[in-house]
Length: 163
Image (cartoon, rainbow, N blue to C red):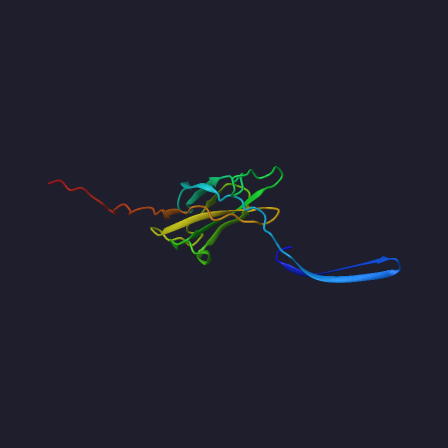
């Protein structure tokens, strides 16, 4: 069940040859389960591969507890969704997915393939999701990064002249 639902419960019984029937409308309230903790210690490293198809690694620690600090039970698994944005406020509608529903705690990505521009400041975050219920964590603390560039080009046809 994914939302509060209203149902009618009916019951009847017979005693001493008399049958009694009653109905009552009740609400079944969806109570979400505990949320996992947010991924922690996000870092970006690289480059993993060299230009022209330069890639970088975004990684985080695995989520093993609920937000309350209680351990996630054996047999339950956590998946991750990694996002990036240009918005320093990290507005939900500005988040662009880098990876979705993965079990790994790192991803390798290409800034160019994801629409990031050289020298642009971008922000990364990730969310943990319980695989069996879909209950998400809060977003991880963002990591700011200036998209790498190759720097200035070496001068062409340079020469040294003696005086």
